[in-house]
Length: 255
Image 1: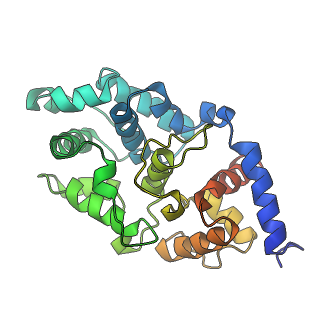
Image 2 (image 1 turned 135 degrees about the horizontal axis):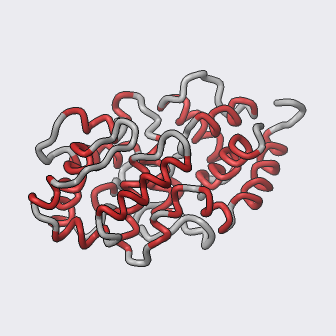
C-alpha cells in the first residue's frame, strides 16, 4: 500500500492520467514536436533521433536548439544526411549544453554511414532475443560508434552496459515504436512496444518512487528494470504508455 493505494488503485490512477495526458496538446510543449514537422519516415526518425540526443535541460531550450538543428539541415534531415559532403559537414556550427559542433559533425557522418547500409535506423536496433531493448541499444551504439570519432561524443548515447537507464534513447524508441494516433509515431513495425522501457528522468523517477514502483534512489538501469517490471504488470503489451502518466504528474502537477 502507498498512501492508501494498492496496485489496483495505482493502475487505475495511472490509466486515468494516461488518458488525460496522451493527446495532441501534449505535443505543443514537448520536443516530440520537432519530428512532427515531417511526414517522411527517414526525416521523422533522423529528426527524432537528433532531438532526443539533445533532450536534457529546459524543454524550451531543447526545442529551440532542435529547431536550429533542423535549420542546419535545411529542414530536410534525410536529404542533408544523404547528400552532404565532408566540406558541408565540417562547416557545421552548433552548441547545446555539452553537445557541440564536433559531436554534431560526427553524428551526421555516422548517420550517413548507417543509411548507406540500412534502410532505417530501426534495422540497427532490432534484437529478437530479449524481452527488453537493452541489447538492441547496445547493438545500435556499437554500430553508431564504428565510424571514426572523438571519444567525447560517446557520452551522448548512453550505454546500458555501464548501468545507464538510457533515458533519451528510450524516449526516442517510444516515439518511433508506439502508435497511439495522438503523440507517438509508430513508424517502426518490427519492434514490439512490449519491449520498450520508460524514459526514466527526474519527474518520472520521483513520481514512481512516491507510488512505490521504484525503491532504489538512483536513476540507473537497475531502477529502470524495477520500474519496467512493475509497469508490465499494469499493461504487459504497452507498459511505456505510463510514461505519459508519470511524466505528466511530475511535470505539470508537482506530484
